[in-house]
Length: 96
Image 1 (cartoon, rainbow, N blue to C red):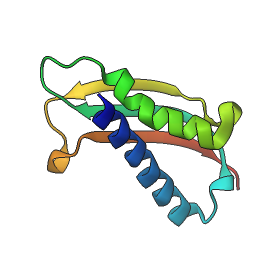
Image 2: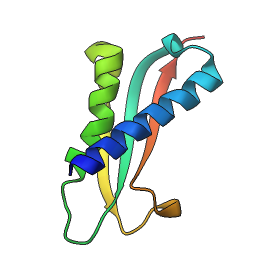
Image 3: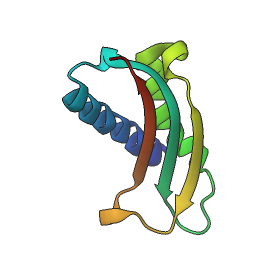
Image 4: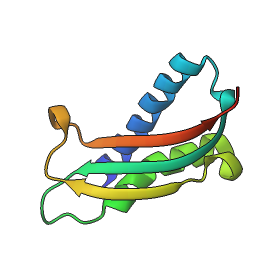
């Protein structure tokens, strides 16, 4: 569980790096709207929300509750590309 949480947190850092590269500044993010978290898991594992909390906790910590809280789904997958542990799809509102 802890490794999955950390993987989700690291995925969050990668998402932030991609957004910074595209936007120039993360201050342009007005709000985090929706997050879809996918966890590479065995059939017996069902704690997907607790894993994706690694991403959510990071975003809320960095952006605060007003900009960082978001709608969220967390699901398990039998496999993810390249064997990665966590994949995140996120929608953000951006200031011009």
